[in-house]
Length: 154
Image (tube, rainbow, N blue to C red):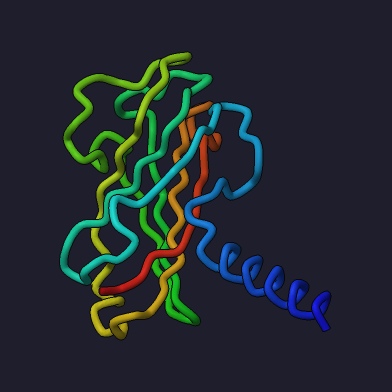
């Protein structure tokens, strides 16, 4: 009986920790970014306030103004929205110069939920993805870092 309750407790803790694992890399190790961690400024968000996502690490390539983009994706069940922006237009205003290769940095992305999500119920969990890319050719962008994680509607 005791081993069953220990096993049940372990299973419950595992399920709880994996459900709220936070923001993680999308694809494991990235070639162009030494990932340290990522986090939302708050675990809950209002439908009308901006969401701030901080990605900590070190780029292994320069992220030049005009040649770096970020793609955001939000989903909740069958409701999905994807959009992109120039990287430096999506920052929260704390960065004044481009991110350069080898510099430890915090990339603070700031964005609002798309209008499609204005009717999502309070307490609902959204899955958010942010993928930063850089120009690698005339019409080609390569992924630098991609992170995703859950956030709750307040």
